[in-house]
Image: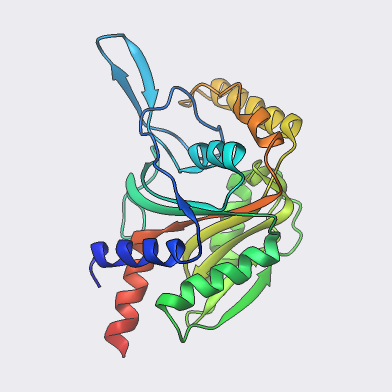
Length: 256
């Protein structure tokens, strides 16, 4: 399958379910500030004004939900700095992100399975909950995951991994987040969306101070984003790496 065929199929899949496709702006004066996600910066020289490229479609999609209260999706180029480039990581990549109104994490798992099975009809799914290791920082958690968890993930099915500490994703309701691995590769990250503006603002400011203290790049925090989240209806959302999914689809086709 070629990338253009997959994009067409994804759009047809969500249109058939009455999702609205949202166009994503690429120049942003501010973005959500999450741990270990660093934005690319560009400058409008004429105005000497900085803009930041999207790290995900989330900001624009949540604006749409706030205004329209509808299920929606976007396919967008995303950009992340300070990450290695290899067979599964590139600084620019395509992401599918969708949101479902009045759906919890279990509902989202079911929707995700149906979406993946649309392209990989024989794929089975299982679940794994991480042991409670009481991690309070990302490097220790990452080391634990790379050494103890990832090598033991099954290579012949999809695995919903849960049990991540709350600090890792401030935009998720605590303990209501999963990562989906297929054949040992992370494909998607989904959660029930956090609508507590105080906790979101606190986590953003904490991350901002961490970056300043450690001389790490940062970007402006939108003053409206946390307030916007507090006004959202109950919803769940997920981001899917399109190129990674395509590789698995094509690898599966070769095996057949």
